[in-house]
Image (tube, rainbow, N blue to C red):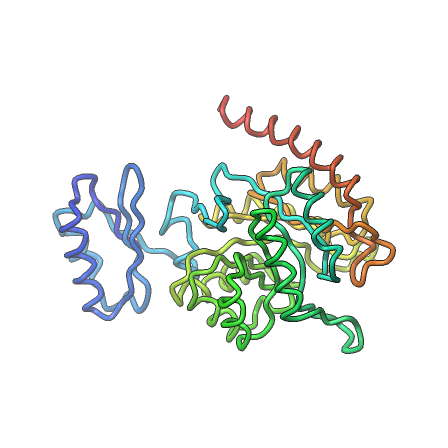
Length: 341
């Protein structure tokens, strides 16, 4: 349920209604836009008489929300959320960012790759210090040493870092090392204890869609994080598992406009994991840009044939240079059309 307040509603009046609602045992989510203020009611809304609420002087109307996700719902928060990822980098709304780097942190080559991707126009650095792998014998990541290398690269280049967290017990480690963005990978998209634990922080969370997850399941995973108090969630479409075997996954670009329609959260697209092959990454990165993604996550490695993981889908720095040039061209067209509208 949401209460849309009149434009004349004062801060004091908003505070009074919020207090009244919370005394009924519900949580509230207040969204102040340019033209209206919306109070979202989260919890057992049967405790509230909607007619009594609507009769209050400052309430314009009361509307029920049928979707199970509340805080992530655009009805609760009509304006696009813009997430501050640190180092002056924001994502969401008209703020478009490219996250680039190797699949896994391997050593000193990280800084070489980081320098190249930044020079090409990437604004955030990715790299896995902890790697969820299908086989227990595959490379699992450098762990804390990998986080240290990412932090060193971040300090030198003044770039936010995005790296995956797999275990609720590691949240404090990530906080201590001041990781800018914690990534929840596809395999952990419904790891509810992990979602709750990162929800207790204020660190931005890049939340990937599960391997066979629906759009609603992705939004409910975001709701787990937001229900704990962390509204800094970035959604990521990275392809889903289907019967098709010619690519690693099926890149569901339908999800980008659908998520924008349903939610106010930023949406990033990952063409690397979606396709699994270098030759498909650029065209799908361009397609994701054209359909309205707020950002891209692209794997880049200086020697893909010797990468410790996912080399088959990594671009070389030179290939990434070319791709960024074309991404900027697509952005110019998309942004121009938006202005003309």
